[in-house]
Amino acid sequence: MIDRRSLFTMLLVPLAALGVPARAQDHNEANYDEAKVPVYSLPDPLVKNDGSPVKTAAGWPARRAEILALFEEHVYGRTPDAARAAKLPAKVTQTIPDFLDGKATLKEVTLTLGEGVDLHLMLVLPNQAAKPVPAFLGLNFRGNHSVHPDPRIALSTAWMRPDKDGNVVDNRSTEVSRGAAAGRWPLETIIGRGYALATIYYGDIDPDFDDGFENGVHAVFGKPDGPGAWGSIGAWAWGLSRGLDYLETDGEVDAKHVAVLGHSRLGKTSLWAGAQDQRFAIVISNDSGCGGAALSRRAFGERVGRINTSFPHWFCDRFLEYNGNEAALPVDSHELIALMAPRPVYVASAVEDEWADPKGEFLSAKHAGPVYALFGKTGVGIGEQPPVDSPAGDTVRYHVRTGKHDVTDFDWAQYLDFADRHFGRK
Ligand code: GTR
Image (cartoon, rainbow, N blue to C red; front, side, top):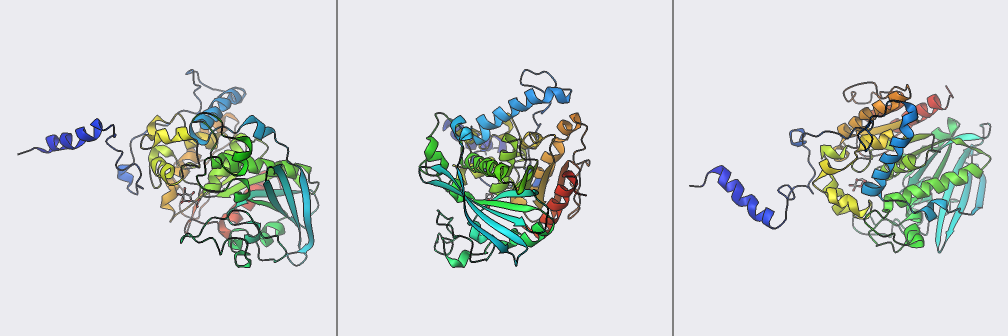
């Protein structure tokens, strides 16, 4: 009779002979069992690559540069210098002074990269507030016209994500999709609080499928050599910076007080934009999950192997080396959050969004704390994930709210309060 150990060996040896690591069978699967979270140790954001410690705020920029380079090299890929340096001429194509029943002015602006790449930025400005006003800037998933049903907003003619049946008709440039995402963009509330809202359709920047650098901004700058070439998240983050370039030229916006935010894959994007571009005064991650705020090493919910299988174009090719091998990553998401320091950063989760690992998102926020402490700032200030609907923390703030993967009025209420507090408006 074969004992259990021999049976185990018999099963593993053939896999190993094929070069398949023992865990390769499951690294694509989501894990929802805390008991299966591996024992892990996180890289220390305050220990430099040469092993020396960082003890003061003055020592942080050098360490920060190392961490940023590791994220470029191993996770998101490097934004080409030529793309970073690109200046996109802006043209205001439409101004609607009586938007939202006269409470707001809507401006549509085209930012032109050339070779067919135009970024359409929609800016909603509060009419009542004294200018310049602080702003939120975020990408949207379904076109600017999905943000509000006003028929005067230009319909996007760009590539659109198919729906779950693979159908693009309802999404693409039809009246049907007007206002379809309005629930995620409470414009009246935002402008009522004295903020502007700027948004760009993410598909304008890089269509969201694995196209091998054939379209969007990737096509303009060509595919850089090597496994560190930027993926789609890198491209979308680049677009956010170009949006901020424009806001810097718009006299009605206080570009020194712009909060960048995003949901889900676009939350991963807002984090990567905020990490690279320190002009963003506040960075907000809404349910960003794997490859965003959630610690990769927990391998909980969506995991590195799974995300790289579903979305091989989001990250750089080198990130694929960490499929089922998260412990080998030279960085983890707490260091992504730490790259925002000393700026305020908000990490938000939803309790039913286990796929995004709410606990792992909290732990990233928590373990960024020592970097904020260098600056005398308080991080989340608690050791354990707070109760549902109970935001915690000061410069690093976190909540897990009731409900599912989405952007809700509760989320926005927190972001507005957070911005008020850190922009000195309260
Ligand atoms: C899911 C993906 C998540 C998240 C989400 C989204 O399919 O697994 O990481 O990014 O999409 O962006 O909607």
